[in-house]
Length: 441
Ligand code: HEM
Image 1: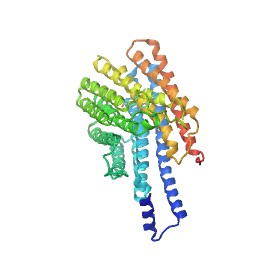
Image 2: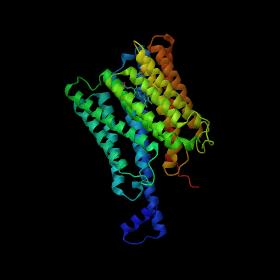
Image 3: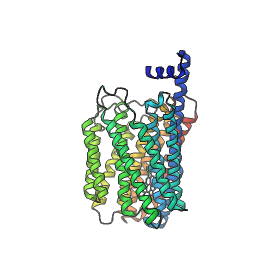
Image 4: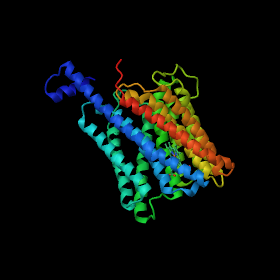
């Protein structure tokens, strides 16, 4: 705080009154909250329209034709890109920028870098989606979209890596910092591979679709290699407080990251059986390190959120184990399309989306200028519907796609509508929270 005041005084060339200092820091905080709200709102828009609605459309087409391969591969990939990069990626960048103290120290250059990164990232992801769906001049737009995404991320990476914690030098950073760095490196590699693939397709490909074998490996990199470590890192930072857990086993969490990284490398090399066992081992180790399933030390902090919050957060990790287990089954099976799809869905919806629903609604209202979540009941409804939709989708995808039970084709549209309702409730709850007046104690 004293550093903030000194900088303010130096910039103004005279000593400010306490009132002036208060006004400037309040304006700064408001600017930062506005930045965060724009990032989160952008992520929600990607989640709803290019992401979920296209996913539902694809699934309705698949179930009416009773054939998984009957929809455009480019549309499926456009849906996946919008969800992973447009929704979760935009949330990560927004929360990352918001958390950098440099942005609180009247550094206008750092704040404008955050806005530039938003503009480039949003244009890149939107262009990528339009190129996948429309395919107009795709040889030109596909690499351009990948370049825009990469530059946006490099701006973010530079801003975040220049940041030193307040107590740097006094003690080694906590394990969660290294885990988040691992997630950031994973995201950078994902964007580099994405750019390489886009350039390759532009010169040598017949369409903007990634070939299935490459796409399978690339999906492991973008989910297990990047988003999973991010979620572990944020879990290690926030869940001990929110759920009253015992202190994280830091070294073990880093061992989990190492095991997970081994799994991602094995998948990229095409050694799928080794990969799925390493990924499962990493997830089990992370759960043990985070002490999620141990008796908590203190009661959970559920003020401002629904009391069921700790149960749903734990259920997300159960979905992650299910995803890893289905991955093992798929790697061993002879014709595993439905099992891979179910595993991917258990990870993306059951684990990643559920964590974003739970932790997002817990922290984002406060980050957006000390607001209160609009409705804890809507939060509960969103998480319950997401769980129900995910259970229905994962089970029916295996039963229908693998031809175990014909009637399961009819459950798929129900699962799609249930999940779409869940994400709509989540988006409405956050958007109304942002639109309402700030909460003053
Ligand atoms: C309403 C919810 C959703 C529906 C109806 C839906 C539907 C689909 C469908 C039909 C596919 C094609 C493959 C298959 O049949 O399994 C798919 C693939 C995929 N989905 Fe979703 N999805 C939803 C939510 C999500 C979410 C929340 C994420 C990520 C956070 C996600 C990420 C992906 C990814 C990465 C792929 C693979 C894309 C590729 O093959 O490159 N989906 N989804």
